[in-house]
Amino acid sequence: MDLTKVDEVVERNGADPSMLIAVLQEVQVEYNFLPKDALRRVACLLNIPPSRVYSVANFYRAFSLVPRGRHLIQICLGTACHVRGSDRILEQIERTLSVRAGGTTADQEFSLETVNCLGACALGPVVVLDGEYHGRMTVSKVESVLKPVRAAAAAANPAGGSAATGAPGQEADK
Amino acid sequence: MGETMVTTKINGRETRVPIDTTALEAARSIGVEIPTLCYHPALVPYGACRLCLVEVKRPGHGGGRIVTSCTFHIREEGLEIDTHSERAQRDRKLVVELLLARCPNVELLQRLGKDLGIDKPRFTAQKQDENCILCGLCVRVCEELIGQSAISFTGRGPGREVSTPFLEPSEACIGCGACAFVCPTHAIEVQDLLQLRKLDKWGTSLQQRPCVRCGKFFAPEVELEKLSDRLELVKNWLQLCPECRREVAATDWIVGLRASPASPVRRG
Image (cartoon, rainbow over all chains, first blue to last red; front, side):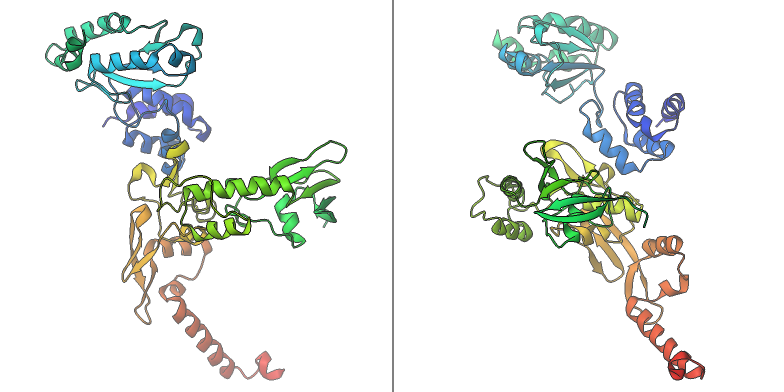
């Protein structure tokens, strides 16, 4: 695997043990998750024991040690969003994309994550798609929010787009 | 000798200790016993087990404050520390109840519970076979004293545990067994199977060195190499198992005595 990006990130931030989290954040942006070899390289460059790097990478929800999809959907299940029915929206997304919370679709397009508060309670229920906030979500708005991204994905990769459209419960529920 | 001393009252008894002494050390120095699980005099205090809770009062500042005595440094005059106040004991009892809910079958915890008057813990245990209380002694001894950092805490909240990086056999582990030695609940097992030293919890399996004299396997090669580097010991010395080392040392000494008539023992 190509680890030159790790070297670049460390160079940008400085090979300082206290930069560990900043380095990990940037490495994750590069690879979309934190590959094991990249973490070992970070440990080596920053002169931190691998056990400590693993411990930090493992602690924060923002870091993922398994590959994630090209697009990240975060749904807030915090108190304010919860009382406005975010659990039903979560179910709808799970059905639409055939993916469980915490998982990635078979075609590696979407990862679905639950979060506990995004600090935008007034907008609840909130869904974040690739960093873009969608407030006052409803079950019926799920389709329209996902549509542009799914269409783009299907256009870019016509063969692989089938998994996302093959949501079994989608038609039956209507 | 030129240390600043502060006076503090522990359980009503006045004592003078060097400034910055922890409440736990101060109490122990005058023979007051405070139970601990995560404290080790050779390691930096960590405050993880919460068993060493004491009540600290600053006269004229109202009610006391509950602190972990192992991390509470005495830095001012006239503090009043009550190691077994009603509040401290009540909180300590709760801590042990919670620990028992995590590790119901750890003997040490059962004994602590009995001492604190817990007949039946209020909380039900999730797992019967858990015996790690996450005190962090193993992690700290590996990092601070051995200098290997082979293991660390991973995960968070209920998923927190001690493990090797990536849950793979650690490359850094030298099989010294210090982690097992400091573990208060015997959650780590070290096995010596002839030529192999095994720590199954960390996936460690290391080749041991045989004693050049009796042939007994006595310690992992990597550990001995590390030791001889760190402690600047005579490498030959580490070719022998501890028993043979003692024997050789004893014979050398006796032979040496006989050989030199001017030895201090004879003169005396």
